[in-house]
Image 1 (cartoon, rainbow, N blue to C red):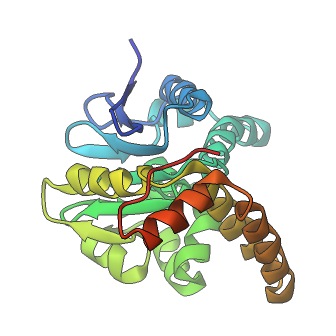
Image 2: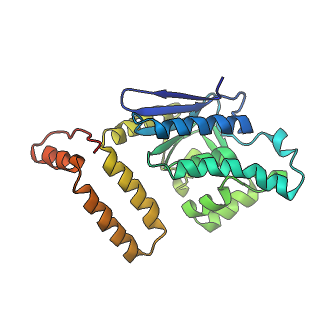
Length: 258
């Protein structure tokens, strides 16, 4: 039985939820189940948005320490991380939005998975952190790289070097998550946002995601040129024609996927 459930609703929202009691540890088998679910969502034309969360008290409360205990050489450690990094990169580079609904504990690899998602909403009672330093290691699924890109080097140093946890509210203040939801309502909030995004046409969503991601690594002039070119491509789509027509006719647009 998979530790990562996968359901798709009538709006094209895929809900993935980790269920590996007691704290949803991110073991190698769990990573395999996550990869299978992500692959499925990316290949499923009915899926427009993905919401990722965890069952019970945790989003994901870090790695399976029993696996880490067996890593005793440089090669062992490096090889161990490659699979998780590849999976998280696959999420970040997806052309469908992934929304992390962070409930409970999101620690180590759990916080790193949330960072790989495009949008993050946290329960106000959630606890986020990168506690690997307490084990004599460092975050290895992108935590040392994505964290400073979102919240700056100074705050990243503090989180990584102390191993301390921060609340969902503080994570929002830092910019680590987009916003918080009242206790117990984070999945509902994530699904509400996902429904809003799912109602938009795939061509514009796909290109908008690519332009944000690709342009972020360019200088401003080159990024604006790329933006112009991709905007031009959308002008030829039926989705653009429907969107403009709906605006002129004062009605809600239909999502057109071409």
